[in-house]
Image (cartoon, rainbow, N blue to C red; front, side, top):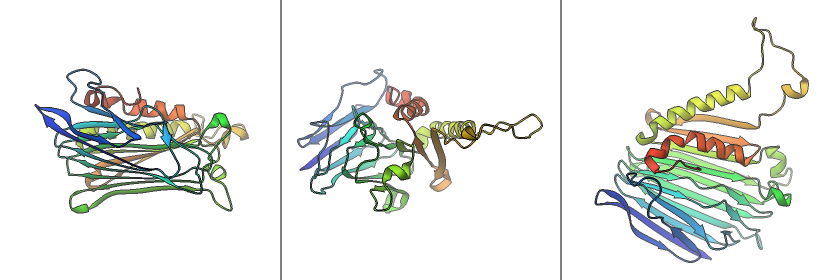
Length: 295
């Protein structure tokens, strides 16, 4: 079933305002009147699907247009469930968004959770100008742990593209996980149950970029630290501990001209640890958004 949605946000009376909102059943947008303090100028949009998930064969297409100077948050109320594939049908989700001058769009959903045999493909395309600001959180869990499912889906594909004016590519990324003939996804992922990507772009969140890069560096130096004596000689540790895989791995790197963007990649053994990371690292966005992401 095809589902369509469109949201436009513009300045009306000096405030970010939804001037157009359209969605076709079973897709639905919920737009609260206010999130956070009244002085905060931000529109929150909750993307919902009746039934709480995406069914085999579904095709969802959403378009967002964020006007100059506006702030918009696109989020969910729970994880996006992708149900079992029927007849090898793939379900797909496409988001196209334009972010105007001095505008901010934060795409901060809960994770995607694919059921056993599910086939899911998503593509997100963002068009920005030189002083647009953009936050993207894109993440997936290994599945329904309570049902014993871990990386038991057939296909997960996620594409994120960011273009500047004149269709100049700024950031092109793709994640492709597919059940193979030689090895399963679970074997390749080993003990990690969550993978995530966070993209931070633009002047409004420069302070967040700097903080996140420092925090990732600190977290990983703590995770991978090998104890040593004062004289610099390595202390012998128990062999089981020395080669233990970290439960949380993160890396950060800059992209774009003059390093205007930062991308953080995460692999973790628990969903909770990623939620905590996101809460902590994005807490500085509260003045911009009204409430802290993933609060």
